Amino acid sequence: MSIPTSRTNEKGVIKINTLKCTGCGLCVTVCKDFGIVIKDGKAIVHGNSLFGCIGCGHCMAICPEGAIEISGRTISPDDLIELPSEESIADYNSIVSLMKTRRSIREFSDKEVSDEYIDKIIKAAQTAPMGLPPSDVHLLVLNRRHKVNAFAKDFCEHLSSMKWFVSGIVLNLMRPFVKRSDYLMFRDFIKPLIEIYTSEMNKGINFVTYDAPLVIYFYGSPYCDPADPLIAATYAMLAAESLGLGTCMLGAIHPFIQNGKSAQRFRDKYKIKYKSREGIVLIIGYSRIKYRKGIDRTFADVNYF
Image (cartoon, rainbow, N blue to C red; front, top):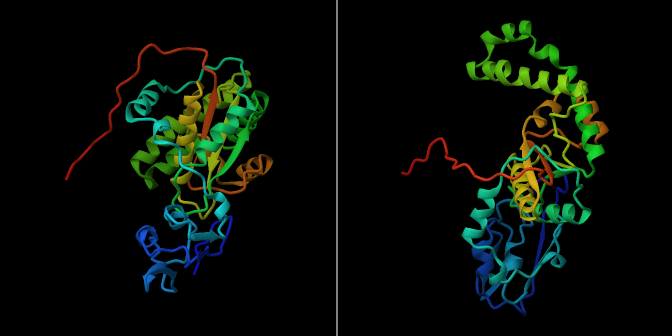
């Protein structure tokens, strides 16, 4: 039995060098597929695992003797890396300071984001945790302002074909059959959003991606954990902020390009491979404004039991 993703449907293969193995049992402790046991003082692979090796790499990464190798599911021993030194790891205060200074930026300077910085942002995002390896997060990268603006213009043309869906007649017909919260969302958010996007774009004003020089769209596949694209985008956002860039998460583009023939044409044009349960657009660039204060945010509720 193996768990499929868009990238592989095979099990990982675990090889244990019994000459190196000391039987410490660390691999058994971290394998949550229960595919490794200690027998006669040595770690061995047995056939009663839960799913078959998913290629998380935990056992290979924790073995102090280098006795374990995993291959398959896009992982191999060549993927092992040295961990950063403790001195180079950001402490809590550094991380929180970065988070506190972040604001959603929609006013960008004319400066483009370098390819070097784009590579660094993507590299950082690749370290994000995932529901199931290998990562099934897909990225669309629009790395120049003219590409971003063309994307926004095409998106508005797609939205124009959907205006009937939020017309007064359709909303009135919809009202008895949907939850009140859904009805209010369509009436008070989606309808005016489509109107402002399309009407301003007709004037040459981009309220979709705000003339950002860089856009990265994170989306999944039918096999993907819905949270994975959002987590990866968050890592990318923080990486961009650490490089002195401004960022903003845009949640309104993804839902409109999932269903219908027009959405399919849009995805095909931009080589977006899959419809995705969750996805998000991250706009990135150099801010042309500087905030003097932050905002102390709160959650809706925090309960301790």
